[in-house]
Length: 94
Figure: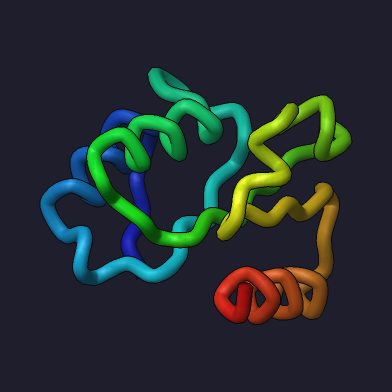
């Protein structure tokens, strides 16, 4: 597992180690570069890991049309560990 303190750092890590990531778990609201913008920037740079977003907001409110993108899933806060496990399995299987 690799962690980042903000969206810009996450993007730098993804660019440097793209082959190491099948899944990015991200909050929707992040300092410097929010989760949806992190996803868009990653895609613009040809990076293709799947994304699992978490937020206390409703999916449509938090992600807009991004929620219908292939390889993108949403998990509403608060979540249980079993809900997280299930969301990870579903995201990776998509």
